[in-house]
Image (tube, rainbow, N blue to C red; front, side, top):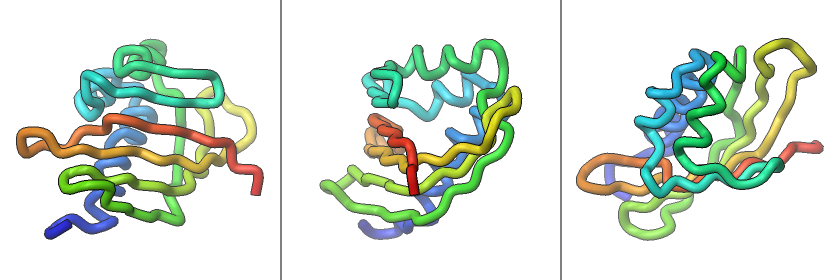
Length: 122
């Protein structure tokens, strides 16, 4: 995995989170592949469904990514796993989850093709 560090993939993932904070569905959609699959406690989501959650504005007010780990699944495919602590938009208690995101390089560009969130209980 030459020239690709954990920081590189965290920076890509941060752009997804920044779109959630900004409530920017176009920025969100620009990072997700056309065949994106999201797997969440509420079920599955496509790229368009994921971006549509931002139609009414931000879903997150702040976040912090920690415990980052990167696994090269295959050349041009990297699994980023981490803990996200965040505050939902509209108030409420802070929440935490463990996230795994599969980033795949296609035609020289990295795309988020899969993401799974699990509620953190510890």
